[in-house]
Amino acid sequence: MKKERIYLFDNMKALLILFVVFGHALEALLKDYHAEFLYLLIYSFHMPLFAFCSGFFAKYDPPKIKKNLVYPFLIFQGLYLLFDHFCLGQDAALTLTKPYWLMWYLFAMIIWEIALPFVDTDSLPRQLLTLTFWGMLGILAGFDKTIGYYLSLSRILVYFPFFLCAYYIRRRQLFSRFLAFSRSLFGRLFSTVSVCLMTAYIAFHQEQYKVSWLYGSKSYTGDPYDAFFRLQFYLFALLWLIFLTGYLPDRKLFLTDIGQNSLYIYLLHGFIIKYANQIHFFRYAEYKILTAFLLSLLLVFLLSRKPVRRLCAPLVRLS
Image 1 (spheres, rainbow, N blue to C red):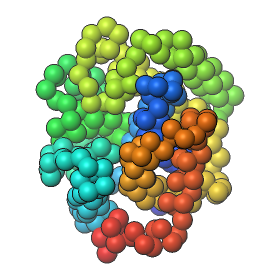
Image 2 (cartoon, rainbow, N blue to C red):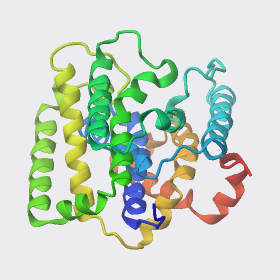
Image 3 (tube, one colour):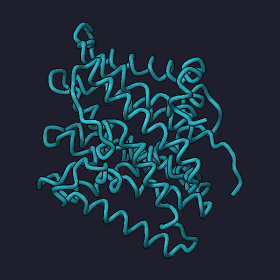
């Protein structure tokens, strides 16, 4: 398959990594400063779409998996546990079976890419059947009361359908058709109206929901958090995907460089956000949510700069 840079994905990853950082910054403001709506909205789509972006370019390449995924996972799993102990005064067991906080995504990526040979097929019926099977498994995972955070298994199952869907779209070279639909008048109108309606629904019913329901790691507790809720979650994320691909430009922008280096932002921002929450940084700001957003913008910009990448490259990439 022809290898070419698709700037649309870089631009989308730049936007998504901003939402990741902003979502983590909002965690300190959930109870006292009414940030639940923004938090719910962000978590309703940003990680499924990140899984989609990752799946589109995924391939089974053991040396690359070792170099780009296993290595930084081991390094930063240890660094975050040490940071928790020495800087935050918290004690966490040194373990590889429960990825630390944001490290679950790297662990999931390792599993997803290792699994590719077992789900790889050129047959359209088999692809549809496989995708349906994993989608159903992601929904059924919520019925397991024991799955939790162990090995991030719940999240691996919940988000794998988005990863796999993108992988199959690229294998069948269908992305140009998907993009044409997203950018058509009907596609843009449909996705815009749908996203606005579902966003309004979240705004008016936010008291009914717990933010943890959107982590992909919690077992169902009953109405309204049930299998139908997760099906709605899948649908909303898909609508957001159509919406963003319909409007984000497919050309090089100031966002592009940020998206290309989103891994550095993802791995490094947690130290700053955790420490800011530890010292109650937002307590001193008059406009706390705005301050959290501006801090997120600053971190996304600074952590994607070349001096930071050069300094941290030995931790992020195995040479």
